[in-house]
Image (cartoon, rainbow, N blue to C red; front, top):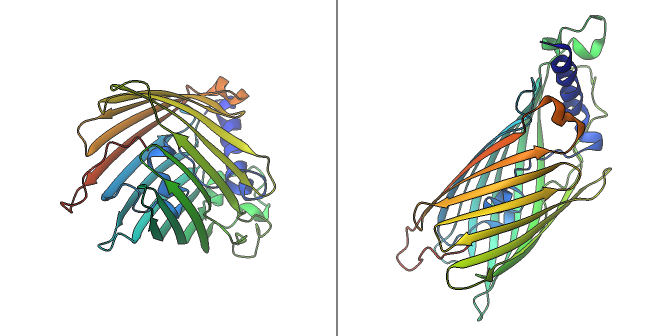
Length: 308
């Protein structure tokens, strides 16, 4: 391992260990708009059928110990259509630290005469946090912090609201409400803790003509102890065949997006992030693949051509 990669590895470890104090903790993907359940439990049932999504993200490719994230979600409205259930599973690994979160959700849906739906969701989650501190092999073997591995479970709760039609949407959410402390044997890292996260999402689909559709969208996020950040996205779609887009994450990255609609039920997506910070010197960027499949299990519920 050369000096640059070794330095980057230890920096990533420190981020993974102390991010709970000063930085973004929840894994956030570039294609979050196609897997809204990962940040808002009220989006359960929003595809009006049984929807399954998988995302694989490799961040900062070329740096040892760089973040890797896998996300799986499944959700569907129930028979009455007034409520929906969902499940989101996320695995996030940074250097020798890892987090696996399992989050079931429940949403109650109010239907309006104009076709709009207001969904209000609740979420419970359980997280397994682990850190293989002994794998770091520090020169100073007397430092107590590095003599014991960490493996702990944390319980949390969240809520969200989501209002949407076939043309636009707006949502607010707080997936983690409890400020739980990480802890280890001997309480070596008890000052690191989970912090509350808040999200605001919005988007609108403009019909340029019968073939082309333009969708600007926005994600604003805030976690306690940090500054406000945002994603600005612009996607252009040709019918229900494919879409291309660009995204800007403040002070972090510029991304290119591509979505291919195999049919009305099956969509695949790819995103590439060009990093704007100094770490770009050590990486070729970040890559992300997304797959979504909708099962129209109820004949009365057709798969509608929505772009979110």
